[in-house]
Length: 416
Image (tube, rainbow, N blue to C red; front, side, top):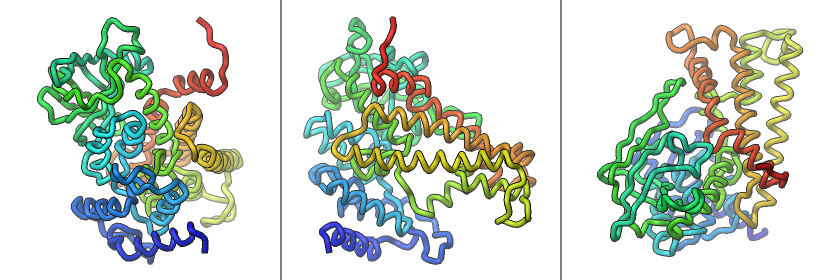
């Protein structure tokens, strides 16, 4: 038996013995009993003690000091029993990898260990009104005052700020410098006096995005990551991790990368219930709403054009998954690159196309917003379709991704 096979047996045995029943998919395929927040926290603590929440991070910072092959085994074994890694968050997928690269030892100890335990929820303070695609034009100011920076300004489209504890934030520390040179990267507690968070209600009815206002907020200077006025390099690196996450690259926060990775059947069922449309779900819907030649769930769809579109959607998904697998293999020795923009762009546009296709398949049943004439899945699918429009904006618009690809990947000449 190889060393990796022995490691797999060790991980599998530990998970089988320690994972609570309500934190895994039942063997009979039924629904598991919902876990309480306390039970999720307890499970996260057990995983962290084993080094399983962030396996490739150093032990001194709360990780497991495992290599990427071992981390992949941990992820696969957790998927096998349909359990979750409760620590996966913006902290593990975006901030943590950046702190490992740029933070001081003291900052890593202070901030990374709580991330691996799932104790601190982080949000990202990047976009501002008028500074979204042109992020470097941000105007939120931070002025040094002794052991603190005093912050004034506003952020917008801040995901889950109303449920977060801390923010990693871009601020302007030199108003006279060229816009890319006068930016710093700082961390601070959202419970600090002067912070106001206001959720933004979306067309889908959800409110996961927020406006955040800062009025004389005092952030400890020790929480400045890197050097003052040199935060743009850190900002760009974090954007690469974010685009990896949004595209699905990486290992779901298990390693240095932050993508969602492949998940178990329980999560696939949950996505279907929320209305997220994959090719298989669209095909199932087409049979239900449009009928088949020959009837039943195995008959051929009557609409030849739709059959072609569904086949293309499935081929696109398969090609994308295989390309991501290859990219993950090629990136084992390094973090994400500008190529992450390619995957983020493709994933965003592919997701929108699939949502549009599902809405077409549903016909009148896609018009529901509320009421008992529509199933919960139909209502969720309509809202998911509306939400999908934002995927080509968040993490950098599709237009910005094309610019990055042209400049950083294809090395095309620029003008002006």
